[in-house]
Length: 562
Image (tube, rainbow, N blue to C red; front, side):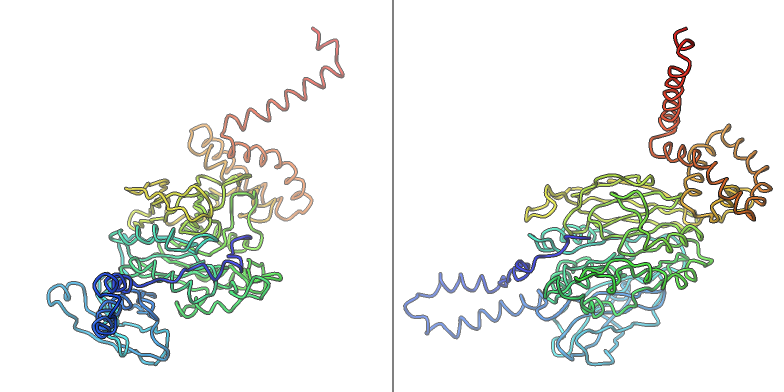
């Protein structure tokens, strides 16, 4: 979004230099124990003492290392990643959690096949739905990392995952100020299978800022696998916004994943899409969505959505619907058309720094951009589909999936709040965290059939997913189907409408005329969905009454006085 970048004048101070705890202690002891008059006598002892304290501190902080993180988990494999020394190597010791608990050690080892700064080492022949403990041992510094854990995907059954996005720093604070609240809260969760991150990990494609991300997220990444999605900030240029976008090097080095990919878990498909287009960044370094990029992925997306799975979730950085505009992002509409053609379970996005939930033709759309970035106000106008939102609340979305019962439940959890969108204030941590929003929705929707489609409207507008057809269907599902009278009207409509729709479908003049006749129905439906049934119905009736009164007074004054 515009204005979400760190000014060039502030970039050097985004992350202040850190003094290792051991060094601070050694300096204090140096001043208090040894007389200033004879420092040389104690110099060897002082150096040895400092080394003993500094080395563990550097190992803890990571130094040139990014502590390991897990990606690409499946039922039988996982990829272990870390950043080490230039052209370094290493190995991984691992075992099931049960084996490690019983033997206090590992029974398997795999060696990194190449020398590289960034390692992405696959573990194979794993057991499904099993917890594993592992330890990465970089060459030459085998004890720099402690033990970490992950769990393989289940073949079937329920599972829970976390969704976060936009963890980057602000103009006046680092990720350690805000994102740490979210990462630490996620790390306290149990029975979580993996984390989806919607992009904007750091403010720039900059090593120092990515160092900070992995340090702050360390507790969370030590327990759960992460599935990535690229955001516009991954392309931001540290040299200044007047420069072209970078190649998003640190994102590619960290995740070694395609920009659009999919994975399956317990019969549920997850589809990750690429929304920021480096060719659509104007004269700066801030890629925005483009119709060309969206359409280039549409065929692949169709193949992913046309599946026999029990449900499908999608994620991309930029949202299709957003508070502040009443229409969808036209650059992303090809994806939305496919979402409703194949009736996905839900979709997640970030980019806007707050939490929002929409219900678009029965499909939940979530914006979860509240993991740390500078907050954005919720200011209207809001789309008709808007359901709930909150800002200046740091949090994450927790989604529990139950394929056997065809349901998923999403809970938005607020972990801390701030007063200002962008300041160095210390967030007010909620203890316990607040469950701010809960919604349950079906994983699998039935495709429209002959006896449940909007025949006349679909024929007139030429598409089942046209915005006006969606409004009419939403009105039907919200106000007519739930009550007996409305349901009877819908059944009568379904008996007489197919023949009329057939006549309209092949005649352009009838199509145009029908669209004109449907305008009042679409407008009334939109008002009722926006304001509620009675207010939406009364408002046009009041308007008609006022017009009628005015006409009667103007043209029939004698009748008006009776």
